[in-house]
Structures are given as structure tokens and as C-alpha cells.
Image (cartoon, rainbow, N blue to C red; front, side, top):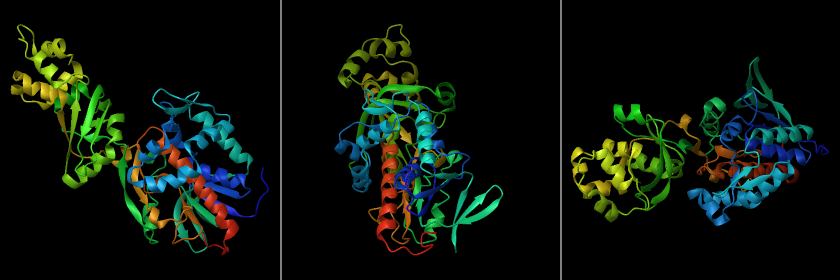
Length: 419
């Protein structure tokens, strides 16, 4: 255990950002008390690893940074301080080997989050980090930080504070966004939380919903022409739900779709149901006489459209369109889906919005509140799935932890300033 340097730091939030801040501080000998409202830490982290823990991505840094959209200039210094490569090296130091998958995504060899979290918590405890569960943060009052526990309230003091409270999605796992009004009341600039990596509503018919909800729509190209010239066209798959659409292909453009719907009331997404087959080919094949073939068999035999793709055509097109090979071929290559709204924030994988970077210095300390640092998803940024969310959370926690060290070591400390 590192020799203590005599300061106590309160970290509020036990996700990757808070735990990484605890890592940096405890390794330097700072006494760390970590508080979380849930019965255990890392709950959303464990949930994210259920289908395979995608920890980061191996693509070149320029492409990696582009995933953060309008906030990449703010994320770059964080990744300069703790890069995807540094994250993999840190994991190796924990005894967690990683590999690069065929898509460039990086995973632990065993694909699981739980062994990583167990090894990490063991090291943090060995370094003296104290964990206080079922402590819901209520804000500040004269003399310290207020927490609500099952048996009442208590107030604690600290020499510095790291807030790593997450966004507003998956509230059942601890990310409630309840911190937002507490900071707004103190004059901190905060952007409204919005759903990110989310699904969208489509007004399906009852028949289509009852028959096809829960089915994947594979091998399609999704296109969206944003009003700001931020068009999107990518191949992948999505999932039809009872309410609309979701899935990896939808998540990649959720920010553009969400913002367009906010500005225009709805958004048109276009699906190419037959990638690799051009419209002229489809027209030629669909123009062949049907003979005794049903329309379903005609589509299947001539152009390979069947199942949910054929059902989607029937859901969107008028009956007369099936009698016109030109219109039918055009629809197969660009089937319009009207998206009405983003799904509720609590269903989203992550959130956009949060503490403005302009409210923070380069160490992620609140300019208006010396000694109080912010990290993780509660900052105003967003990114698609694929390892980008976790990487930025780890990196921001690392920078916040280092920022606390610099502040404790080089600033004139005033008692209870951060508390």
C-alpha cells in the first residue's frame, strides 16, 4: 500500500470513471473514500459486458477521435493522457489479457467484465480505498457532503471531491441523472441529458408489430441525409421492436437522428434491402412475368427478398407499388422509414449532455468550485458503442484523478473548500 500523503478525497460514483480516479489517487498514497448509491459498484459496467466486454477499439487515433463528433476537441486531451493503448497496458497489469476482434474492437480474452472488476476492486482495497455503498449523494451543506443512507443522513468532509455519477440511462443500475439540478443550483453550466445509442419509434401496424417485433433485419444499408450535410450511409443490421427500430446500425446514427427529430419533428431513414444489387438489376429481374408465382415467391425467386424484408416492403408500400417493377426496385434500394421520436432516456445505452466542458479546467475541475472534479458520462459528450464510451470514461477518470493530485500538491488548500 502506498504511503499516505495525508489528504482524503471523496469519489462519488463507482463506475469506470470513479474507479479509475480512485486508482490514480490511491496509487499516489491519497486516502480515498468512494461512495455509491447502489449495493455494489460497477453495475452498469457489468451489464455492458453481458454480451462480451468490448473495452476499447484498435482503429487509428484520428478515426477513433472522430467518433466523439462535436466534442472530439475536448476528448483528445483525455485520450492523449490515457490512450486506448494505455488502457490495454493497464488491463494487462491487472492480469487481464486482451485481443483485437475482426471488427477492430478490443475484448478481454475471456470476454467477461466480472473478472476484470474483481481484480480491480481487490487492488483498490489493497491500496486502502474504502467503499461506502447505499450512500445516495444529496449535495452540499455547510460543513460537508450530504448522503442519504438506509438508516438516515450523514455529512462527510473531504479535501477534494470527484463526481463520477454517470448520465441518465439505466436508472435501475444507478445512473439516474439526479445530480443535474444539484449542480445547476450552484451555477454550473449543464446541458440537458438526452438519449444516445437509443432506439426510435415507428408507427408500425398492429399486424406487423405482432408478427415481426424482436426480429433482426440483417444485411441492410441505412442512409440518412442530415440537414446540416452530416449524411450517413453504412451497412449492418438492426432490430425491429414493438415500438420501432434499434440495434448497432441505429445506434451509430442516433445522435444525428435525435437532433434532426428535435428540429423537424421526424426523420426519414432509408434502407437498402439488397446491398450489392443495383436498381437496374432489380428492375430487370422484377420485370420478368410472374406467371403463377405469388408476389412473395416472385420477390424471393427473382431478387432474394423474403421474410422480414418482404414484410417490411408490404408495411411501407402501397399495393399498387408491387405492380410497378420500377417503383418496387426503387423501394428495395431506398425504403423510407419515418422515425417519430427517440425512445425514452432510461432505455438508452448512454446519454448526451451533462456538465459543459467550458465549466471545467484542463484537469476537469469545476471553475466555479475549486477542488471539485467531474468525470465520466456526466460530462457533455457522447459516442457510439464499440468501446468508445468506456475508453472515454476510463480516460476522464484518469485525468480527474491526476488533476486532484496536482490540485492537492500545488494549490494553497483551504479547509472544507471542496466539501
